[in-house]
Amino acid sequence: MGFVFSSETLVGHAYVGLAIVCLITLFMILWIVFLRIRLYLSQQYQARFEGIWQPIFTEIALYPHCYSKGAEVPSLRRRDFFLFMNCWLGFQESLSGKALVRLNGLARQLKLHVHAQHLLQKGRMRQRLVALVFLGNLRDRASWPALEKLLANENSLLSLLSARALIQIDQERALPLVLAELVRREDWPEARVAVLLRSVLTAELATPPLFEALQNSTDPGAIKLLPYVEHMYNEERNRILRILLERSRSDRLTSRILKRIQCSQELALVRQYVSHGRWHLRMQAVAALGRIGQRSDIPLLLERLGDEEWWVRYRASQALLKMPGMTHQEIETIRDNMEDSFARTMLEQAMTEEGGQR
Image 1 (cartoon, rainbow, N blue to C red):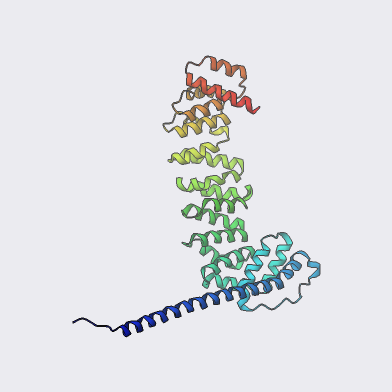
Image 2: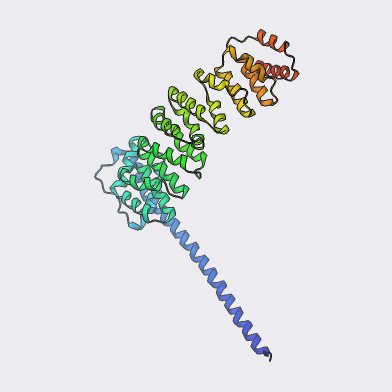
């Protein structure tokens, strides 16, 4: 048996549906208006807040003679702590030296480090990230255990900011921890790690922990750490490169080590790769001979001038021109006596390039 609807019933249902749609639309409009008003009021409040505190920051940091240490500062409500931290960070990032110390003193006077430590443990993600940056910039040593724990956090951003904070607090103590974590993790962006480490690394600071980390690392770990050997003292850098080259089982690692070889003590090791089965290792080996090679290496380079790979021939021709005591006349004699047309052409190209650079 079917249902029968009268026209009056259908019209009534249509009016009810229309009313519901209108109410929903009205609610959405009111909600959008509410959000806009709240955003506007929030922006106005933030502007007034910064208008109060920015002059205080400037006076304390840049004009200490106008500010007495015991002077009262405006009261800070708990709801304003997070806003203050953001405002403080924006101003503090451009400071250094005594100005930075004075501004840090203000944050401690207001007990902001205690609030930041609380946010670090129980705040939302954005609050935790700001707290990490805040505690690092504040050089808050009391936060070290919490920061060290976060260094191993599965969230890569939390972990990386923890590494930054630890380095800001104590570079010498933090560097071995950060290097170990760098080797372990696969999710740290290389560019951000490079910016973080290269901003603080010095030969005195970097050499001991880098040498130890590289000595104890696997081949994949050594690949991650290798870009930073340039910050080590020359003697230790050359020694660890020799150790890594002797034990390397990775073509990728070997290639990167050969690219960094600068010491003639590694000459015997480098020569072993001149005839290697992988062309990119031959290429790096002959390039290394151009930096540290001797005249006794000329036959090896002449052999590589006939290599099947263009890049190997190219690097061999460049290296040949850099051999100790090599003269233009000698190079011309070598070229004229070559039977391999490809080798002769490559050497002529290298001679032309060198002449253009002089």
